[in-house]
Image (cartoon, rainbow, N blue to C red; front, top):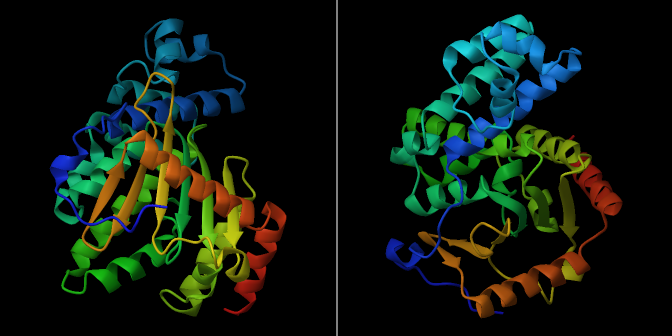
Length: 300
């Protein structure tokens, strides 16, 4: 396995080309939810076409995320379908992201460049496999848990800056509402027992992890102390796989003051092999959920 990566300049990331921006991801996600809400109400695309004074093909393109979402059309649709206040707020947030371009650029003051690149790539990945040895995977963190981490690392930041950084992390998780990417989270057992943010925050985080573990698209596996002792690397690894028409697979390895994007086939092979070994050593899905439940009991 490669040694722990050393910091390098941002120029080294030039060979990583995103397939889709945050804007595209938000538009696709908005379209998927509009379709889901329509089908839940037993409506046809033709029923919605009349609402926006358009054609069935326009509704179809909107639901596939192929046409730019217009504010008037989306507001008319969610009003016609009588969404709950929560769903309406969610749709409006997605609409704003879809229109704002790369939404994460609005958080540039609290987001390092290397993380912005990862967020962009996550939005176009088909499969994400992440190993975490110190904290919960970013895509699975609760707001309170994320806030505790940001507050710990950025002690000089104001409350306003901390909240912006946390909001970025919450918006990043919107991709979990899509059919892809599929996510496999390999989590060191020690992460479950390390009370980030205190007892209440950690209990909420673990309960959130259990909910995620019950979904089909998220595979959570706990790497036990004994099982991972001889194979667990001392740093986190994230492997991203893309559609055959997208970028080549790559590995993201973050360290204290930067990150490496590994793209050379030989190095990617080594990291992929390490993740395969970790998954082989990790507890199964049901056993992993039991380990999470046992950890929750520690925070009663």
